[in-house]
Length: 360
Image 1 (spheres, rainbow, N blue to C red):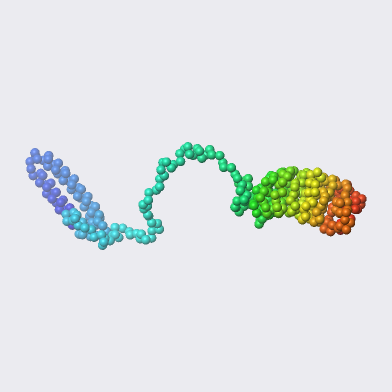
Image 2 (cartoon, rainbow, N blue to C red):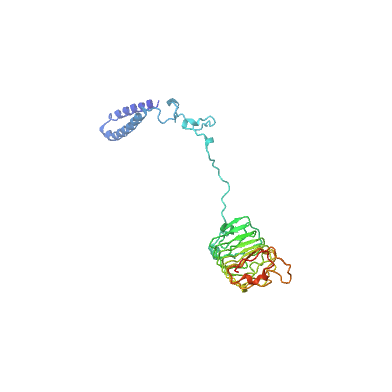
């Protein structure tokens, strides 16, 4: 249909062109210009025929025949589109929007923008940066699984090994007692580099039963370091440099001060008298001049070898006022390695179930 109209237009152009030469020469110039314009139009129409000749359906939606294409002369712009029955598939592939994984939601609440008054200023930042750190306070009575933090900023049960109520800090290179959990019952700090034990190292550890600091470099202790421990039973301080024995609670059962530098002046007078539960007393390899008396009746083992003991008193082990007195529990006495002949002091151990070990 379109092609027929274009061919009709070309025929009309030929008629107009032939009529331009029927006039006189005065009219040739303007008619020549008109002829050139008609030729240009003719070439344009010919190009349209070239493109539309092999592809008559080009430019129309697929599936629509030529005779049903839109005609500008008959097209009604006021007509309404039947949107309900419109087939969207004729213009391309359709999409299944139910398969989309994400849904786009448009927010209706504007983001919160803090006011300028609430914004921290440079002065506020400078003030925060220049504030001194808060002092560290230790609340030993407060709640907590591990108790206070250590000086390294972490609980002692991360620094050491905690199993039940026992804390193992052996061979850790420590130069001081770490702050222990409040429920500690046994502390092992052997083979470290501790030189001094302070009276605050075991404060408020009311359940502490045993302390083992064997193999350190301890040369001094605060006088009352162990006095506040109501249940302490075992104290092992062997292989240190102690010259003075600290004051100990009367609840002691086991005291080990071997291989130190203790002198008789460094041992409290009657320091063991009231220890009614003391069973094991190890004082070998020191510088003692005499046996510290009186000794409790509960004592079973007394090791004093390799000291400087030269004599024994009658009341060292027995009671000279009671000849029927027998010390039945004390069965292990070591006096060897001292400048002492035990045969010269038979009255000193006549109440014992066994003779002490020593030079004769």
